[in-house]
Every structure is written in C-alpha cells, then in structure tokens.
Length: 351
Image 1 (cartoon, rainbow, N blue to C red):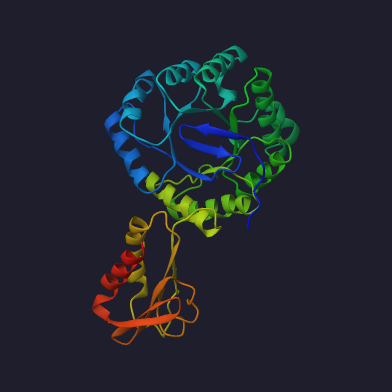
Image 2: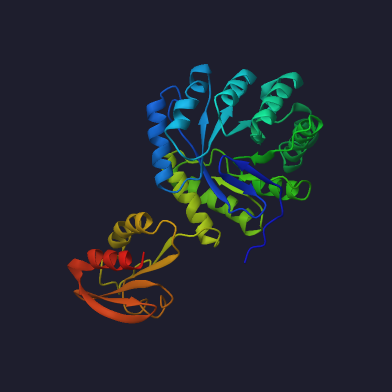
C-alpha cells in the first residue's frame, strides 16, 4: 500500500485533487481550439477512454470565446492553458472555464497576475502554477544552473506571490524533459509545501520513448506517494496519453480497471499469444473500464493456470485447442479458432 503525501484539496469542476482524492488523469487536446467542433469531438474521445480532466490551448480571443460552446457539449472539467496574454485568462474565466494553467513568468507584471488571481478568486476556480526547466529566471540559472534547486526556487517565488495576494487555490507542476531532474525537483518541493502536485515529464517524445520516460518518472514519484494528478505528454493522439496514464496508475494499484497478464512467448508456444492479446486488450478496456479484473493470456500449460492462477479468467495454449481457466481451475477446453470470441464472452459474463 502506497502512503500518499498529505496535501491540500482543490476542486476542478466536479473532480477533487489532493487530500484523499483519487489520482486523476489529464490530457490536452491538440486541435485548434478556434474549431469548436473538432475540439469537442476530441474531448469526447478522451472521455470515452477514461480521461478525468482535459486542458485546451487558448492562444487568442476566438479560442477563449469558444469555451461556452465547448463546455455545453462536454462533461469533464476543462482547463484553459494560457501564455503571455493575461487578457486571455480573464476572458476564459468570464466564459466559464473550470481552471487555469499559467506560467506566471511569461504573463508579465505583478499587476497583470493580480488581475488574473482576483478574477479566479471571484469565480472560485483554481490555478495551476507551471514551472518549466526551459523558462527559468536568469538569476536562478546563473546561481544554480538548470537544476532541481533552481526549479524549486522559481516555483517558491511564484507561490509566494500568489500567497501575498491571498490566493491558495493552486496546484504545482515542475516540468522538465529530463526524468532524473523532474524526480528530484518534485522530491525537493514535496518537503517545502503542501499544495497538490500535477506530475508529468514534459516533451517526453513519441509513444514508445515517451511512454517509457513517463512511466519511469511519474511512476517513481507516485510510488513514493508524491503526486495528485498526472498527464503523460506524448507526440501522438492524446487518447494514447490517457491510456498510458491509466496503466501507470493501475500498475501501482492506484486506479481500478482491467489488467492483462500475458507471457512473452517462446518455443513452447502453441497459439498466437501476441495477436490474441492485441485483439483482447481493447475489448476488455471497453467492457470493464472501471472494474478490477485480471485476464491471463498464456502460451502454454507451463505458464498457464500455475503462474497465472490468481487471474480471474485466462487461457493456456495447447495444440489446436486452449484451456480456459478461472482462478487456476479448468473450466473447459476451446478450439483454436474460437479463442478470442469465447474469452471475450467469458469476460462479458464477469463484467
């Protein structure tokens, strides 16, 4: 059991973050927010795979003014991602956004930040303070270089500004494309404040490399009890970000959902384990999205009911047929050409 760091609780729409709340999974649309239809469609796709919160880019007033339509036709909380122009933040708040993500370092003067904070306070919405290793203050870089110390010091400056303006409804993100730097930054900050943390490895890369970097970085911190909401950043369809994020949480026992255990195959394998697993996985993710269930797809009797005896249901390949089992006990044998169909039907009965 992972003992989570104690943090303040904030609320984004109907989703609680921090405190004793479940760790939420976020993503960000990659559509042009000025095209409300495409943005709404992608948000629906993210909802369908279990996304809890979605962020949208607000680069101009046309984007900000699409927020009411987007909100009207979607159900999950929406965060406005704002850079440089404080007026976009004010318009987003006016149009009903659920939260803001800003980097105070590129917003400008204290007065501009004060106007954003005042509007957010009146609307009772939180702000995520984002610090990125690529946009640190010059004096901090000169003093500490690009390091966990400079990242945390930068974040503490921004937190102090918000606190001086009597605003505490915040969460913190400390982003870097370096996994070790990200991990160390969050570890240091966890000792200094009790605000909830948004975890992620920024610019992590393609689906393959980005998944590995995110799993190591986010997973390490979560295993230490650090982190309250996560976003996996991939150069891919945002739907893939959500899938990876959910799998990271499931692997640590931090989120419910179906799990496939399958053998890596070897010379003993009598069935096409790779093909079967690839076809079954998306089906169980649709059928049992919020149910804890373990499905075993094993290539032979050596790795069958024995090694996978704790699985709720599974198959073990044999010559021209497979053994169907539950909790390590045989149910029946099924012919090779019916494996996927019969396995999915058995899963339906459980889910």
